[in-house]
Amino acid sequence: MRIRLVLLASLAACGGDEGATVAGNFAPGAGSPTSVWVVEAERSAGADTAGFSIADLVPGPASMRLMQGSDTAGVLNVGSLPSGSKLTLHGLRVDEASGLAFPRSIELDGADAVVVNGIRMAPEGRVPEHVDAGGAVLGWAPESGAMLLRPQNAALPDLRVIVGPTTELVGTDGGQAAASAINPGDSVQVQGRFENGYVLASRITIPSRVAATDLPGLAPSDEGADDEPENDGESTASSSPAASGGAAREATPTPAAAPRSSPVVRSEPPARAPARVRDAPPGRERNENRGRGRGNGGGNGKGKGNGKG
Image (cartoon, rainbow, N blue to C red; front, side, top):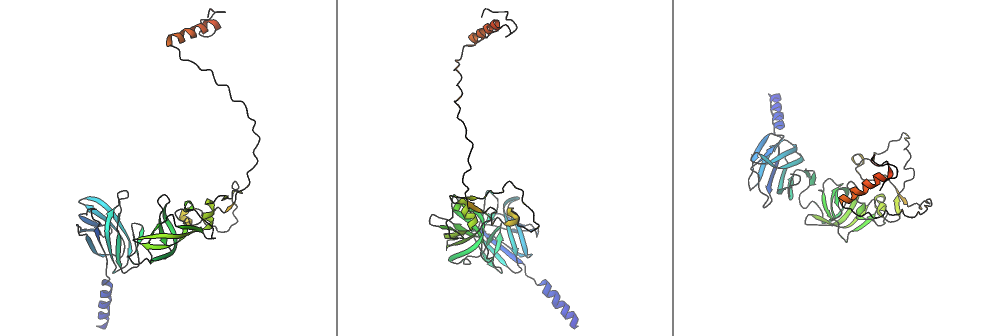
């Protein structure tokens, strides 16, 4: 009898795991789907202007389709959610270019952060007012000064950073740097104030080997560029962005070498321009050609000796 009770308790415990819940609402003017289809669970839930809610999802990632009738209006990919967690997506709007639905903000219970369509997100209030975070550059638009940074601290969401005219850009050695030296995948340190969902950067530190390549008078060394690299049997990091994350560049900046002496090139007088040829009426041009043929004796097969041309 005791063994039976233990088995029943064990079964109840196994079947008592609580599924994850995903809910959402839509931004004003964005429209609303008629249903939401969950690919993994192969089931759908109704949706309207008030939003949607899907409970008892199997813990893990969830791929959802926002449906307008039988058509897909948007795609929503949610990263791994633990058992018992609840994710609420506020202000969903579909990006026309990608077809992905992004929320304005989220609420999350049961986890620190979650990845939505490739962007790591966390509830409001998770980011401190004064930011001092190191991480990898996911995206960088120098023309608008917009940067997307993934912090090394996994509890923080991806940060939308504004690089303005007053932002100080320095290298890790303390020297000056230029914004044009930043590339996706670079490791940087961002300091600034968090306001209205953005980090207004006051200072960004770039690795010196990246920053120096953009400064006048410095250039990557090309010594031995034509030589084949020697394999000494030691393990080296791959230079591909996928392997190295693009955080470091292989070339080390060195002072630019003195210009090599170039061979003396003698200047030659320009070739004489051809005489200007005036357009002749079609009849005159044919007569002139016929005359030349007679004069040379070999032009069209009709010339004889000294022709009359």
